[in-house]
Structures are given as C-alpha cells and as structure tokens.
Length: 95
Length: 289
Ligand code: SF4
Ligand code: SF4
Image 1 (spheres, rainbow over the protein chains, first blue to last red):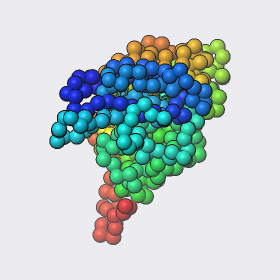
Image 2 (cartoon, protein in one colour):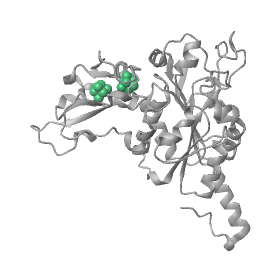
Image 3 (cartoon, rainbow over the protein chains, first blue to last red):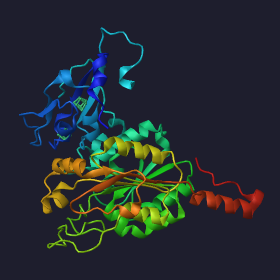
C-alpha cells in the first residue's frame, strides 16, 4: 500500500522522478495514485501526441516510486536522492 | 527529458527486466498489462530469483506479449498451449522457475483444459492470468470470463452466459496457491507473485485489469484511469474467503485477496517417487540444472 509521506520527513533524502518523455501514453495513473499528489499533466505534447506528466511539486515527492509501479508504459519512476548535508550510514533508498 | 537533475541518470527499476529495443509496447493507453509487469519485476527482485533460472511462457493475446517484452528466457507458444509447454519445460529442467503469463482467453478458453489438468496434477508452475473480461487482440469477443450483461462484439445486447469464477475454478481443480487482485493493487500483486515463487506446485494469480479499448469503451465504463479508480472503490480485501463466493459482475463488489495457500505433493515429486520405487538404484534422478 502507498507509503506515507512521513518517510520523507526524516530528511535524509529527497524524492524526485525521472520521466521517459516519449514512452508515456498519458494514461494518468501516476498522477492519480501518487500519494502526495505531486504530479500534473504537462502542457507539452510528446512525439506521439500525449501529454506526459511533470513534477509540479518536487519538494513534496517522497521518491516512493509508486508512480513507477503503476506506469504501464515504464515511462516514469521515483528515486530517493540522499541529502549531502545529512551523514547517514544506512542507505535511505533501502529503508 | 527528466525533471530531476542528478549527476548520473538512475535507471528505472523495471528496465533491467525489459527488452528495451522492443519499446514502446503495443498495449493501449490505460491498459493494465504493463502495470502487472512492473509488479512482476519487483517480485523477481524481492524473491531474489537468479534470472538465468526463470523462464516465462505465454500464449497468444495481448497479455501473451509479455513473454516477448521481458528479458528472461521466454517462449511465446501457440494459442492456449502455454501451460503444457511450461509443464514440460519444468519436468525436463526441474531447476527452473517456470512462469506462465497469459490472458483469460488464452488460459481459460482455448487453454482451459490444460489449465484444469495442470492444477489437478499440481504441476510446479506459476500461472499469472491477466483477466480483462474479453478477447482483446482479436477484437473484443465474449470470453469465458465476460460478466453477464456485458456488451462485446459478439454480444451486442449483453452476454447471457454464466462466466467462470477463476479462483473457484483453480481451487476446485487442485491449485495450491490462489490469489486475486486488480491492477490497482500493485504492492499486493508483487507480494503474491513473490510468495508464489517461494512455493512448490500450481500457483494461480488472477489480476483483473482494464482493457479500455474494448471492454471499458463498449460497456461505457470510461477509460483506464476511471477503471482503476473504480477498482479502488469496488474492491474488498477478504483473505481466506471461500472461492465459491468470488463471482465478478459488471457492477458491484470485487473480492480480492489470497484465498488458498496449502501444500500437496507436486507432479514432479510424485513422478520422482514412483521412478525411485520402481527403478531403485537404477534411477539416476530427474536431473536438470
Ligand atoms: S516517487 Fe512518484 S509516486 Fe512517489 S511521491 Fe514522488 S511522484 Fe509521487
Ligand atoms: S503512468 Fe506512465 S504512461 Fe501513464 S501518464 Fe504516467 S508516465 Fe505517462
């Protein structure tokens, strides 16, 4: 089930997404099922005429990769980028 | 084009499991099959399967394309024949984990006889059935899973045939593991697939998924996203529920969960036991990698 955004509140990492722009077919699954609702359709078209998503509120992304798990076109995925300022031994991406 | 800026672009966790040269795939916008492939990739990682020991077998149909898109030893068999192919593959090479990934039409209609007998014999294969209630690739005809009242190209006034309740069919035929989820339940699907990998015997996972182009559109159920939202509303998780009560209608509740998880000797174990008893020290084992 969706991970709570609380995971991100430890601030050992920040979340972000990568989008494979031309693979997207604009189904909207990622936008709908992102727990903190940080994605929106972009205004621009990709080469196939769909509107891929974009990260409208990056600060709230937890990097949970639920968007990646839902995307039927393998066009998006979430990542957790460790924050340099916080020195942690454990890899937060594996927590 | 990426939104985030990082020194090195990370790879999508599903990417190592895909034949990326074959992307984009043929599945329609909002089709649920691709979502199940993500879950499958996560399950392979979670269950720490050595990838050279996993083989995937598909039949014909939209879901049958999965074998062609994942970067594993894969076999795209003739219509309905994925299960007998997989049964033979597993017996000839018992070291493999053999997965059958196909649709409701291929597995339950054309391959229905193979399905019940592989379950009866408890062949050690994992069967993943993406059920979209219709024949997709051939143009939206009535399938043995189409709910009563649903419109298809061959039922313009609504289907009047009683559909199969797949978990009930699987359990009564002898499956040792039976679960059903919808494409909305991504984490549950991945977990069930990983559980099936760790089990011996005939495991069956039904995944109800949208076919927006044929089933949803003809039945005025909206697009893929509308369907996923409906799954969220209509699904009720009832682990351990009696499989008798799991009919799915055009409207109303969809019961999901894990219903059966039992142990019973597999086809291979029974075969090995008999060969050992009969041949005694002349029996050299079934071998395989
Ligand atoms: S990783 Fe994806 S689903 Fe998770 S918070 Fe970020 S955008 Fe939303
Ligand atoms: S889930 Fe994938 S295909 Fe659908 S809109 Fe998001 S990125 Fe595009």
